[in-house]
Image (cartoon, rainbow, N blue to C red; front, side, top):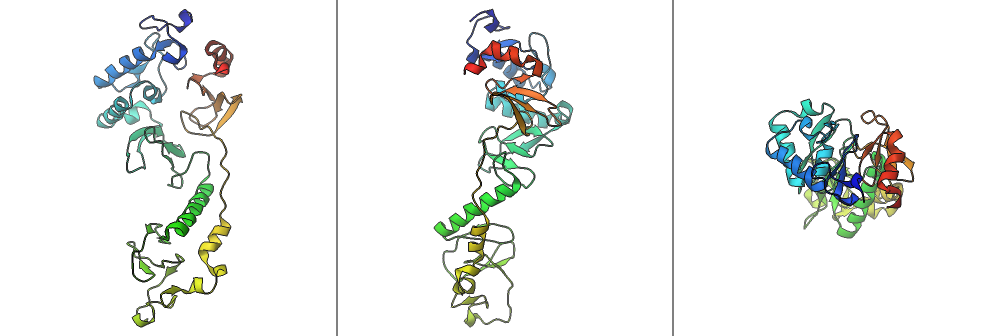
Length: 301
């Protein structure tokens, strides 16, 4: 180690694992010093990005994800709450929005690029597609996500003997009673095959509530599995082979690997060719990549 690994605040020398390399300018700070500086700003309710510039040369950060990378999760949560209270979200980053985690057990609020197709909660790690409004991993298309959900449901139906409303998709479990189901959304359907039904007002209760049933048995199943819509769905949907995918750390967009799955480039409208290192999460210009790799020995990690 040499003075290149010395903190610009306390001037002590640290290992690379204990250092932050500031975005763009690449000035070096120990994690403790930078964390202490940032957390003090948050406690003083300073939320503008100018208060989180490089302490040595005053280089400005481009968004608040760098702040999240430096401070504790509790303090970053306070930071987001301050943004909302001070109505400074649009002023700070006019291309970002505040969103809530879709996991009801979490509900953490965090910032994302307003045009992002996906969001990933930094606390519980749940991923959510903002295009189809469903939960599936980044790198999987909406159609693939739908296929995976269908496969998962079919397996659950076989093992747990549950059903699903064909309209609102809510899962139901019958404890007792007939197979003619009425969902909270007002939809009628068969518990056995999930087929949507119409209520037959004049149909006698002595005749199984509905012509779809014979002695409370689904006629679709009685007529043979070849007519069972659940079996048809199982043939239609196949488990998708999910490939390795690294989203952009800043906008969650599609990235292009440049060097040995170590340096990636994002060509989204937001990042416009921004490169980043997967080892230290540092933002890079293309011209700076050779120097960055030599300096940090990232290729040896």
